Image (tube, rainbow, N blue to C red; front, top):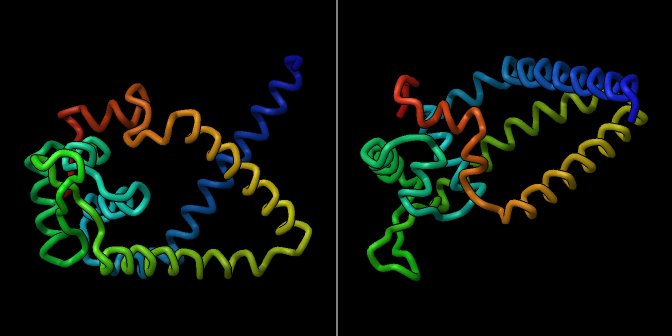
Length: 179
């Protein structure tokens, strides 16, 4: 690919990123009040999202995924457990390990949050003509395929790339933790 092709591609990617940022910000303004009516801290909500995406995790794995220490995680899990959103279960392979998993109430809450987001998103999709919607469907399906390939190539490892900038900020003691 020539320099012109690289520049064109970079321009397209920049347009996509800007449009995605605008879309997320607009969607958050529209449905933010509904989403924020959930009485959880951002870290508690992140813990639920991580567990929803990955299934039961050991405390160590969950702490790493959230970028918090073991003591902080204990408080997060304790508060979520009191609310009936998570529970601790024995590990099938190591009886010293307790795994944290969503309860049915936790899964229901995540489903409700996702449904609020989807309802607002559908409202926006309804305003698009069929050609634009078809192109968007094709693009998102292609992106989902590439993401699935990336996950498969990484072996589905939780915690992601330890060299990723967000992983560094998660370990930085100067970064203020919510929880």
